[in-house]
Amino acid sequence: MGFPGSLFGVPFALKDCFSTKKVGTTLGSLMLSNYAPSYNATLVDRLLQAGCILLGKTNMDEFSMGSSSLKTRFGPVKNPWTLATDIASKIDHDWYIAGGSSGGSAAVVASGVAKFALGSDTGGSIRNPAALCGVVGFKPTYGLLSRYGLVPLVNSFDSPGILARKVDDIRKVMRKYISVTVKQVMYSF
Picture 1 (spheres, helix red, strand yellow):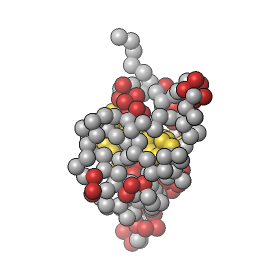
Picture 2 (spheres, helix red, strand yellow):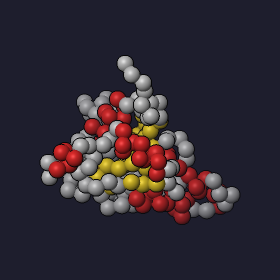
Picture 3 (spheres, helix red, strand yellow):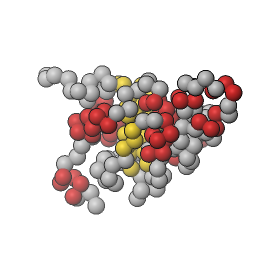
């Protein structure tokens, strides 16, 4: 049977644009509130097979079209750093945005609830929330990670990626469970 891998039992979160079997995938929209795919995205399958524990799906700008995660259909995503300040009750939370559209993924990692989260990036949607929430955001080269099961915004630009508190955590996920062979990369174009 073998020994569990280095990610066995590690909690992770998932931006709500990745298909999850029999679990709602709303893309942050009320219009899709009853949609539950019949399959998992490839990246989700690999993490679950590695023994990772899916904590839940994270809020996002509707259909990935936004950069603040404030005007979402399920309420604004609040940057955890806002809550950590002593002036939090006296300010407008808009000043402490989580960024978007993967703001929910960045916030759940920054708060320490999840070890890492998957997000998607078309034009900064992983990198910007990571910077605003004080975590590391990794957008790999287009085509390196499977996009199967990622609901697209702009198919030719979308790239799944990882948010974590440390670069080493991203390295572990990339190296062990989401890596692809050189042959797959060469023939994916």
